[in-house]
Length: 291
Ligand SMILES: Cc1cc2nc3c(=O)[nH]c(=O)nc-3n(C[C@H](O)[C@H](O)[C@H](O)COP(=O)(O)OP(=O)(O)OC[C@H]3O[C@@H](n4cnc5c(N)ncnc54)[C@H](O)[C@@H]3O)c2cc1C
Image 1 (cartoon, protein in one colour):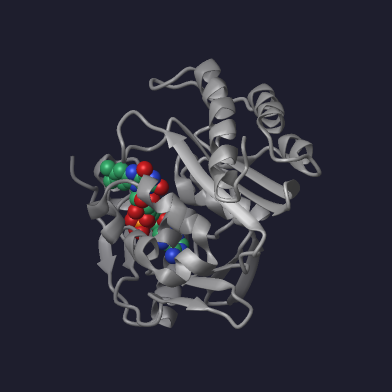
Image 2 (cartoon, rainbow, N blue to C red; image 1 turned 90 degrees about the vertical axis):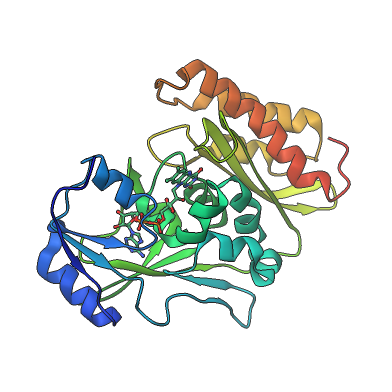
């Protein structure tokens, strides 16, 4: 199929793009890498009257590291750019860890990290990385700038806190603690497909004691989702197989994933538990844990 007719805009400046969004409101869509928007339009699952291509706007394609080690990613940074960036590997390593799971290289070369976050697909990796690492999301409109906390960003299936007149221009990831470890794991039918279920784990560890935990799941609800009870069970516990099994049991009991043609709810719940152990083991492997 081909998209329904639309007017294509290619503004040269951010202000012009924001003016177009303010003018056309709900009838306009931002086009970044196009790897999700164009297929949706081709399937007529989206029929925007106006497409605002931000691809020519200068200054949105950089990865910058702040003085305190925070990492800011701009709206035109491609997935592949973060997979190969030494700054990301050093200061925001969970993003780099997620990248090999995101689609295929051709798609990663066009698709943007912020596009994935703005799209809010519950089976995508980056929304879970956002929930686990708690960056600040910066949205601009012609009326000003808004900073949105990660926990407030994902509202529902392909539904986020972004308004129709806003562009997500930057996401600022906090400095990676020297005591932090993390992993991203998933199960997909074929490598590069969206996950049946996946999880992003970020722990801080003091010796062999877990001092904080964030467990974020994808493919397990209508948005990426954390499981606070499992996180609390980890905090204060020692790194061990028993600790991870206990957290996994809570995850499997508490998640209520939707069934679809790819997997039943029960299978997804089971996978979430298996992936909890796998993710926690991978995260702690580098600190010499025996779990
Ligand atoms: C075959 C295939 C397999 C894929 N597999 C995976 C996978 O395994 N994991 C995964 O995570 N993704 C996967 N993707 C999607 C891919 O990662 C997309 O690149 C990504 O989801 C969206 O990024 P984009 O830049 O292409 O966004 P676009 O397609 O341009 O936009 C997506 C949506 O986000 C909005 N948007 C984009 N940027 C902004 C912004 N800065 N501000 C406000 N709104 C914005 C658009 O208006 C649109 O609604 C796959 C895609 C394909 C075609």
